[in-house]
Length: 513
Image: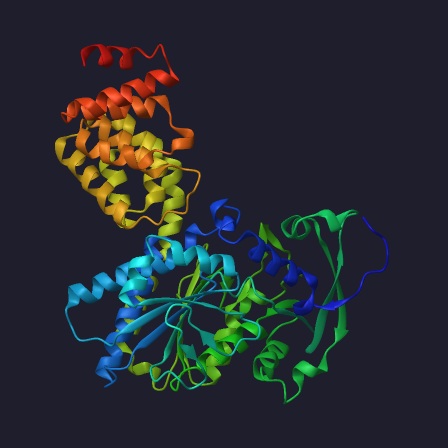
């Protein structure tokens, strides 16, 4: 390691945040395609249903309060791969159509810092229909400094005060990944934790991700009376920490709270926040806390201080909801920074039903258990959990091998439920050109059930000219033969034999044809 004396930075100004920005700008969608950056827990159908239900309840509340005509804008911060936006929009559209009641029009805006991500969204086949309907738009947004939103598709520019309806803000895995300050509380005094960085020799040749993985943080403490001054905007929160905590390191989301205030100013009626992150809203969670460590996953993340966010906005009149029980993996909150927030009955009820009673964090805990029990499950149990998870593609991918083993023993009703479930899942599947081939897994299961017409559809979807497999081609030949398309069956058998000249099945089929 280099031993030269290193500069000392405020934690929120340290170079790690610039490396974080560089990582996302360089990688774009590859950060999620490579599965370096975790995303499933905040991008699955279950959390999308919870958010869509709360937004649907909010739209109902706006009508009940007499605001039915003006459009409601929903902004997702750090939309990343785009999966959550797709799932929320799909569910919200289905809810509004099924209900058949008068609601305010809405517009969903996906935001990110990386231009590459916006370009990817614009070309994604699952998002294009929503753009064409006029209910989806995109914007580049810097959480640290931006005060306006310039929408890419419509050309609309949203400035402070432009929105007549409250802004709905979605922030998943957001507050843990943007700059934060770090303070230390001891003997009723506030200290600022500054940081110096130690990089290995030759770090200049490393990528942003590699530098973040290898960096070592060293903390430096100095008395920071500025946090206790009347002019500091979050002084009341700091004062609470000064009185209640001791020997505690506290990540302080000053930029996150300022970002929410800037976004709230776009509307004449402030905002509703829906958020999920690894962080806690309980003060005792920060007591005696150690200096933070970077959690590396391509980029890095820290712990989100929901207590500070909740306390600050409640002091300004907000009503906030976090689960009364302790979360395991993901803390999900709803903050109504609105005039008379208690009047938003449907929004509050939706939180109670879809988060408090049994929510995305509970589902993820169950899934972790089910993942380890797959070899013991029967098909009816696999199907039941699949339905509970909103026909989630990841669950089918994980359980495909077990389903294949069980298929010879299942009844016709279970086969039909599996078949219909595959089609329902495909409607909600958001492809990112991942390493797995979902269409192939579906096609092989349908083939095993002798549903050749259905299998043909999915097997053809699975084909990639650059990596065609002889067994897939042979399965396609059989499917074509079974549905009566002899010419296609012969063609696929020829292609199979071109790759594997001694393939017995293809030779037999060719002879038969």
